[in-house]
Length: 591
Image (cartoon, rainbow, N blue to C red):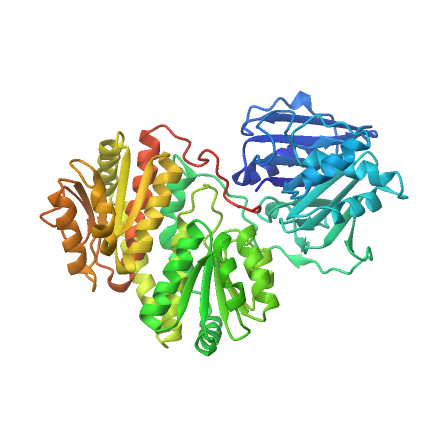
């Protein structure tokens, strides 16, 4: 989490950096800070809370160079003192960080014993003091930064502004991209490409174990371990849109749900050859793993379902943070598939690094250009879903599971059928979304559920993972307790929670689980639960019916739309911050 940003050029640096931080605040919005250098003096402005449009421009000195940070708190509470960047003692440089220093307590103790004082609770200030300690025995600041960085444990990226018109940054785990506008002699540094894409022509993706030194109009890249300068090539930036507005919608979440049909069409237009190549690798693999965390973990599980059900592939889904017990089972004959919005999820990358060492093939679907996950992959796919600003993933999740479905169809040599099914599905989604009666119906349901303490969701077969994602969206957006139940397991534990008025959302598709779902519905209804059904046809046991089209084997993908909309309208009814729910960030780049 957290976002870092830097700029060297001829524009007003404060305006450039604030604009960049606003584009990065999906990564964390507990606090923000900007450091600017003018005439060898560095001034820091930082505040708690979200970066909004009411910033007093007189706070910032005139400058053409600076760095910024938007924070998701890990060490230390949300205070102005703990906000980044942090000064060195003599204010000759300032530093911001994205990551966690796992050995910060040990380092802090060593530095305290040497007389260093700490004014914040952050692990970031430990890095600053460590650099100061290294400067006592090194010839220059960049050498001290390198030596200090080598002492850090964990996934960290740092950015440093000096009073000598320099920006120095180093990466290990958390993302770092450098954008270059050769026409205007500008250099941008950021945690993602999207934040500076409209203003640059080319970029350099910094790899783990590398550091970059930017001064004037030059960019030098070094290997941190050897401290030798390494060559680099500038890649074209294909994302040129400056459009990240809501396009008339009240919130980004609603706008992005409306984007979903187009996202599916973008998938359907992708090159068949790349799918065929991945399909051959899947068929040749001894075992296929899918992996993700949070919403992407559910997408990974749905992809594994499609591979098992439609392609008869031995596929096992893993959660990034809980995959360690599989490490000794990985072999060079296996393949692992990772869907991700950012391509920088720390606990998933850790597993992929192990898989790479084991000789496994890696496939990924990512929505962010230049990500580490893409660069690690043998088979790299882009979601082509467009920017997703809301912290709660909607259209990217739908693209991920649709991609998983399309991959399964490619394995069975039915790629064209899969493409046509996605096109049909896109049309069904569009019809559902433009029908305002569906929105009024879900708004009514949201009002009914406003005072519910618990919301249960129940599904089976193709719909179980979809109900888990509905659970995640309700939790993220409403801060209520939601619980997804596998319908077949109802009698084994969750039935004890069924009582009069308890809301239970069910999916009832025309598939092989239909009869089992009817039995489960009857069982919760017998306990006088309130049954809310998502299905093509109403059922006598439904207290509330959400009608959707019958999409056949892609029904689960369609069913996520009313669940996402319900989470949206319920969050709105409760007055919550929809695009930026409390305590969570979109890109989880720390463990």
